[in-house]
Image (cartoon, rainbow, N blue to C red; front, top):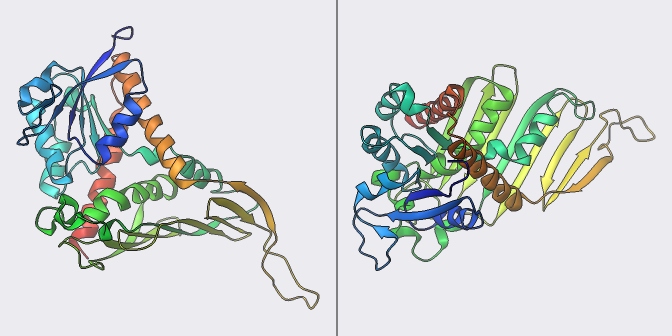
Length: 326
């Protein structure tokens, strides 16, 4: 298959699918054969309402509403032997998650869950500074990622705003990325707290979430995500010898701790370094890298690691328990 053009089927056709398509259409090694929608009749030869058409594809991308991910994986389990790229979250309840854990090993080895922030420079920066001399021992990480989607026209009628089927959409679509990075970089969580609210009063699902995580190694992580604010993309990592910020597309490191005025009182450390860092561009690049990772496995008929699958479900499980215990 490595010399052939990979035939892709996509479940979904708007919003995030458009981002995926933009990346895929620039690749010469794959071609979108079908878009699947269960009900909508659209005059386009590539859009089908027949689920079996997808079986003709080398790989299938699931980018439908969160609550349908598990349903489609189960529909493919008995009738499809190709590769599956599934957007996060894998499941929206613990029953679904348990069943995903117990899927056939051969089938699981061809499933990739798109936690694309694992491929980001954002993740690399956190990892690089875990024990850096400039920051010292990390004690706190604060992440804010939000924008005003809930106030856009038509939002209230979308699946994201549907509290009956997607009450915790903001957690499952946005916060799950940062929760995943926190677990990857700082390890297991011993205590956690979640507050989710509907701030905009648009629709019925939560549009704002705040997570507070206490990791076993002592690091405290706070994550604020919202669809009800101006655009904010900020990171702050606080260590014992300095701190790092990403704000307004600038990454700055302030160090060392022992910085004093003439009277010997502590003052804010000087800026040790400044570099450009665009969070939106980093997200787009991480998505490209994630898709490349998936396509390369399909081309080379290579299985995904069991650990990759396991880590994705572990992040999902922690999120679901946070939702349940709020």
